[in-house]
Image (cartoon, rainbow, N blue to C red):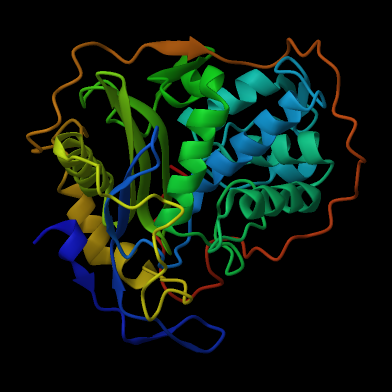
Length: 371
C-alpha cells in the first residue's frame, strides 16, 4: 500500500498523564508543485493540519532572509547563543551560552544538523526574543497566504499551538526558491564540518536522487517523519512535501517517488497552489501520530531498516547510492564582523511549549527530535 493511500488509525484514547485525549484518524499528507509556475501536480490531504517539526526552520530561514534584505542584518552579523537557547533539547550543537557565530554559519547548521539551540539563537538575534520572532513568522505566513499555519517557536519542537499543512509548506518552499534564489545553496549542502566532526544532511535525497537540491527534514513523535524536498531537471524545479511518514526511509522513498512522477506529468490543466480549493472534513484538527511513531514496535521497525553497520537500507528505484563521501562545508564560532540586529531586545518570556515532547506517560525512545 502506498504512503498516499495509507490510513493510520489513531482512534484510541491515550493516557498522557494529564487526562485522556482522543486522537483523530490520520493519513499521510503530501503535495507536489512546479516551483516556477506554482502548478499543483498532485496532492493528498494537503490542507490537513500537521505538526511541522523541523520544517519550521524553513520559515526561520525565510524570516532571516527578509531581515537581511531589509538591511537589519548581514550574513556576517552575530548570532548569539543565550542561556535560553543553550538549554534547547537535541538535536543541537551544544555551544555554551555566550558563544557567537555568524548568521551564515547559523543557517547552514539549522539546515543540515537541524540544531534546535541554533534556531532559537537565530530567533533571538534577529527578532529580539523568541516571541517577537514568532510574530514575524506569523506575519510572513499571513502575507504568503499560508492560511492553515501558526508558529510559536523557531525550531519546531512540539507545541499544540504550532501547526501547518502540506499546502502551506509548498507555498513557503516556493517563496524561498523564487524570492531568494541567491540563497538556494543553504538547502543543498551535503554536510557540515565543525572541528573534526562531519555531520551529513538528514535529507539523504541530496546526492542520491537525480537533481535533488533541497530542502529540509523534520521529525518529532507527534508529526512523524516529514520532508520538504526539491529537485531540478532540465531547468524545471519541483517541490514535494511529505508529512507523517513512519521513518527516514519511507519519507525519502515517498518523496523520490512523488518527484519522479511529477517530472513525468504535464501541468497544463493543473490548478495553481493559490487556486487549489481547501478540503478535508478534519482539516482543522491537528493530526498527532505519537502513538504510532514512537511506540516500541515502530522504533523496532526503524532499527530493522538499517544494515549491520547502521546504514539505511533503501530499495527505491528512484534513489541511487551516494558515489562519494558527503562533501562538508566548514562551520564554527567567531567571524561575526557585521552589524547586530537593531530589533528591540526583550526578556525571554516563556513560550507555551512543553519540554520534553510530552509530560508523559508514554515511554519515548531517546531519539533527538529535529531532523
